[in-house]
Image 1 (cartoon, rainbow, N blue to C red):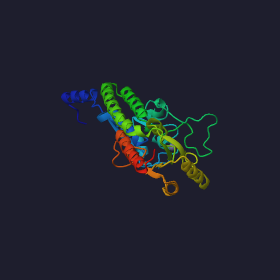
Image 2 (image 1 turned 90 degrees about the vertical axis):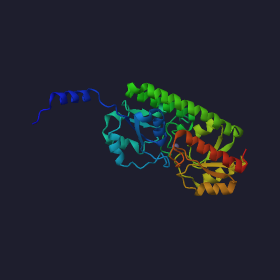
Image 3 (image 1 turned 180 degrees about the horizontal axis):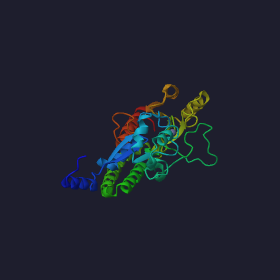
Image 4 (image 1 turned 90 degrees about the horizontal axis):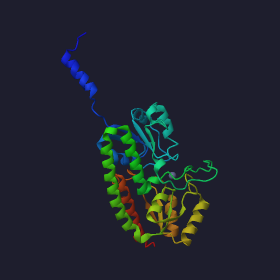
Length: 307
Ligand SMILES: [Zn+2]
């Protein structure tokens, strides 16, 4: 066996004492969370989402390839409120990564510091097919919650990599400033349409409609996660006619057959709005998501002459 000379030994000892600081390896359940992680983490994080923004986030294929990626993660950021209950837990368990198991330091439930709407009272059951048993999990669609999520991620990254805490704090401050500027623009766009009545397919939009002053009077789904039924559709059409609703918002992963027939019966315009980053190729980040959706919505409102 060859012995290392003293100079080489000294160099090896030095290298061991000053390891190159590596980026925090982050996995997220959705692309919205991946972008918010990137906004505050910059080049000090490596981040990948499991779900793609064009998929229904309640029903994502649990590809085994993600088990290996989760095995190497330092941090897992999830939406929570049981959004991912159908697909994420087996992947996390099978990763055998103690750092990212629920309750561990490397597991961040973004809903814990967000404003959550539609929290059920009384008996909570999934028997009726309700996929929102712990409140509405689509809370990232309020920019105020985007800010809260970004702050929670920045705090978590700072705890995990304290030497980079000033970096994460300044990235968060920059995101906060850019988001506030964008919110002024969005508020001005939506100001003429306060109280406008709309119908949505799934209950993806309560945080969005609350924030931008729209009034949701019904849903194409009879309950969250339950496909449209003929009787419910007939009732919805009657109600839309009665209240003169001209905007029907549909998430891109739902079949357009029922929405289109509702549109024909009522004269409402069917507006396909992606609810997530990555839902369309132009929607490359969190701020562009609102730019894209609000542009499309305002265009449709103007076309229908809805008030
Ligand atoms: Zn949902």
